[in-house]
Length: 392
Image (cartoon, rainbow, N blue to C red):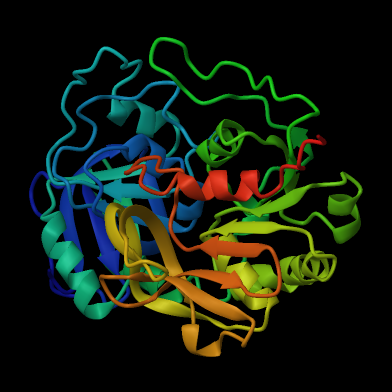
């Protein structure tokens, strides 16, 4: 890295990531032209870059991919977790090559350009990952200019002035805006998603969308539920008016304490009514806040499809998909909440269960998009627990 006051833009550099301290890393820009400021994080997934870029949990972040060959299978219309991408940009090791996959519809670099997202190639992404692991997730600006004209000092000042994710409510920006019945089934090769044929006989799950990945709703359907999706700002009255058999709390971006200002009172009221609850990621953190625990900003966060998590009830280890920069502080859990899962990377809390309510949550993503499918049983556990016994 070079210092902003002494460096010169290397010949041929058309992209750069600039840090708040004035240091910079140059490369070859692709995708959209322009600049974006956010938190730099890294993801260790080998596959699923399109799902990652469209995951609403990445709002306000720039993704540094540790796997070198990003973009090699192009993009398609199915591998998206939201209508629009939410990650601000990405950093990759190798230049994006021509796509080689029968499902490709459009090259990744062209898709990035059309979606207004900035890419930077030709960077030692593993060195950047090591930097994040040592110093924590930094605020940066990523920029792309085909002529290589960069005002590094101005970009550094922009990174330094960005307030960061702590205290920021981003769920309000990425949530769906209205109630809707979820209609998609689970995707199958050659068949697409199909239709959700769930009838009234199925348990009715009201899912609160704090920035949900679409595959979560599909997995709830696969587990046997009929799903209605509500915005993050849904009130207690709006939730209960739908007579849910259970309530699902989705993943999402930003600081859970900030989102909790309006979400926690709703969740607490549902707990008082003994409504069954299942939460994932941000939803897990909000459930923790609703029972009186605290959340903390992590040093580097967890993002990837290869995170080992230990289930404390029997010692089983699940390989999981994760994307979070905040965590529930296990030392602040009340007496009626017990830790159920723990990260084998750093010992952080990855699941809780209430002892006096039908409510549980996990920090990781059991819908596995992308990632392993070890944890689908959690959807079945939740939906099966909502089914009413059949009369003899």
